[in-house]
Image (cartoon, rainbow over the protein chains, first blue to last red):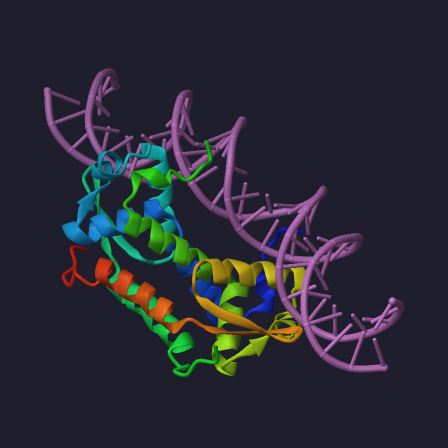
Length: 107
Length: 107
DNA sequence: TCGTAATATTGCAATATTACGATAATAAAA
DNA sequence: TTTTATTATCGTAATATTGCAATATTACGA
């Protein structure tokens, strides 16, 4: 019990859910927002900016990254991140394709 | 430990996270998709359609409803649901306003 | 090489989510 | 009223998530 039954859904549905999970935590939205405002950033800034421990921020960054929403590269010791806008748009298009069909209401 | 520190984020950020949480489970996306295709539906249909127990479907419906994404009313014994498109668009606009600023990339 | 700065990983405690059987509540039909 | 159909709620087991301290890893500079 208690396990999400992914196998009963289509691939598209599972993918939307996976990306949405990234946005389902305020820390990750705050991180994305900050990065989007900087065009490039440094992870340690995020610790100061957001107010969670370095371990927690790093963990959130990897969740965001695993979903494909970040591009990042090392510049020496530091890691520079930016949004993967293509992936972000993909998500928006997927969402739209699901729910922008209905225009009329029943209630 | 283990509790999301909502108080360190802005209201907007917490709201996006709350709505995104609805989409963060494939069952809820499947439910929304099905409802959007029917323009109105009946909860028991969802049990057959999706393949989860009635209790679980009902629980998911209340999560979606609490986030304001559903309109529903009783028609006799049955409950008729439809999407609250206004709320859905609100979510999309919120998302866009956060991330559609950055056009250039750093990586 | 050694020390330091930056990031990642591990392990764990606290909490949240998911799923379902059992049961309650409600409204129509018999 | 009793039965039946439909939805909601409760209790609980299994699993997932969140957050952090401690530790590991990586890359640079002295």
